[in-house]
Length: 125
Image (cartoon, rainbow, N blue to C red):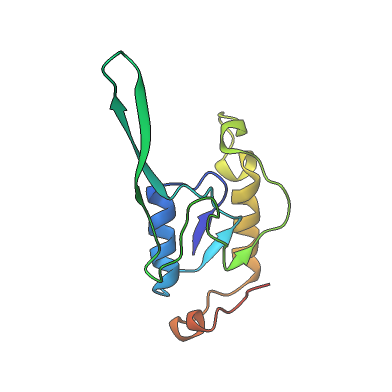
């Protein structure tokens, strides 16, 4: 199981998409951010610059991540907290982060499927 949410972006999103496409892990949580592009800043002669999209990332199955994100196999309901709003303190992570709490609760009540069941996308709501 891989816990994902709106804070899962860029390389983490690409890895999660590859694990999901190759049926190596199920994604649990909320839709990911949707950062599937590489932008290059090119300086201009008079001090300005231009930002160009120079690459796009795709999952192994060919799906674009850009602007859409990944949909988890097990979708948790609710808005959840944005990563920047998670309080930093002495409390355990599960007490500070609603997504982690929901993920742990889901794992406690569901059995992880065998590899053969991943292909069938078991537990999809």
